[in-house]
Image 1 (cartoon, rainbow, N blue to C red):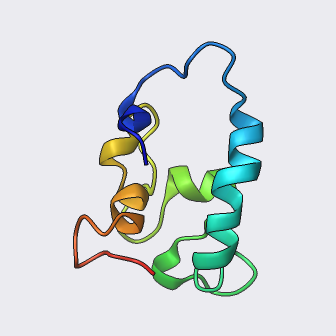
Image 2 (tube, one colour):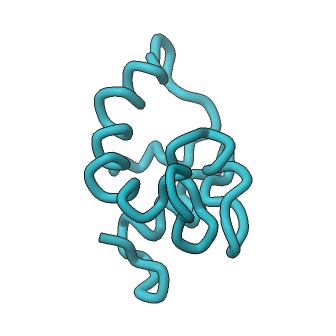
Length: 88
């Protein structure tokens, strides 16, 4: 992940939908949705298959903090920044 994760505004010409589809969605499908999908009872009440799930979060609150991805619990879990919440 780059240092720009904490940036408030994306660079000029940034294609957020394209970036999500090519970079983020495959990670979620491969590593997260087995346990965090709204199709079943998601672990910790956190469903990551819809944007509302990231914002509303689960039992521990929002998974993503808009404008502050560096401090978002989902990013910290994926990057193993806290061993108590580290995810595969």
